[in-house]
Length: 160
Image (tube, rainbow, N blue to C red; front, top):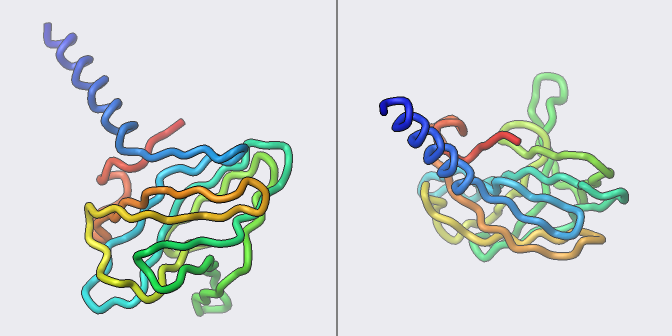
């Protein structure tokens, strides 16, 4: 009887983990787990992150992003130059066939939310519209996460 209870609990826990993960499909693009980190009062900007996978046979490009939570939204990249971390706006991100782009804090690409209307609070959600050169536009729901907890503790990541 205990084994059956344990297995039932494991199935429910796994199902909840998948329910928390957000996945979207736009033509040949798969977008997973859009999230942002909570900000502190007075912080003028924030970052949004997600995974984009091109499952198709042709390249596509992320060319724009927008959200009502910020005055402007830009696509940025971060990279170490010598001993200094540099952040720059880019006009687009190319997504080659079968390529998976994982945006995460502190490295590589992210979506920069500039001129936040109000602080991003853990547990809140907001819309983010992404525009791709070929696939078009899609609106995703971004979940704001506590910036002090590792991703694994928040139930937002899952394996495939």
